[in-house]
Image (tube, rainbow, N blue to C red):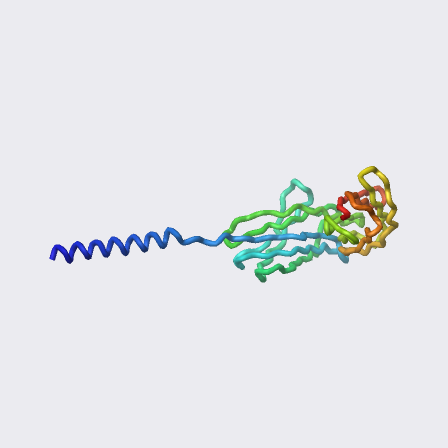
Amino acid sequence: MKTLLTAGLLSLATTFFITANTQANTITPATTLKLRNFMAAPFNGNVKIEWIASANLLNGWFEIERSSSSNGNYEKLASVPLRKKEDTRYWYSDTDPFTGDNYYRIKLVDANRNTTYTKTILVKMDGTHLAVDNLFPSIAQNQVNLQISSGDDSRVDINIIDMSGRTFSYGSLQLLSGTSRYPLNINGLHRGTYTLVIKKGDKVINRRFIKQ
């Protein structure tokens, strides 16, 4: 009888140990929510906001926020739920922007309710908005792509400056209101680091790239 009781206790202890050990080794997968290519630009009197995002779980969302100043109080304009796990393009249109300065950012809320914020984008609703959303690839051989947003149909001058300060005139581009992408041929440049200079009136924007 004593032998059977001892065996039973050993069996119970072994079972408990295995169960506890199994629970200790259970790993909760990390939650990821990634956002890129965040853009905001005037379009037909509204502000069009776009971004690309991916996640490993779908229990998250985005909150579009706006303020009239960079360090002011941000208000939530809308919540946009995650639609797919793979890279997906999202968009939102602010149909009632402020006259003048509008600062936009996106709050990311993942499946574990962790929050992060994007950079802040300034959109001027007075016809003077001009912003380079992207210049890619940063290391290129024959062509770079300029993604630029404008508050109106206008023309900008394009120059390219090398590290020694020499300027190569690229001519001008006719921009359309909203966000557009323009391919720039750099095949004639020697290898090195260059600065792309976009000028519209007294506003100048610089972006750097490398020619292989």
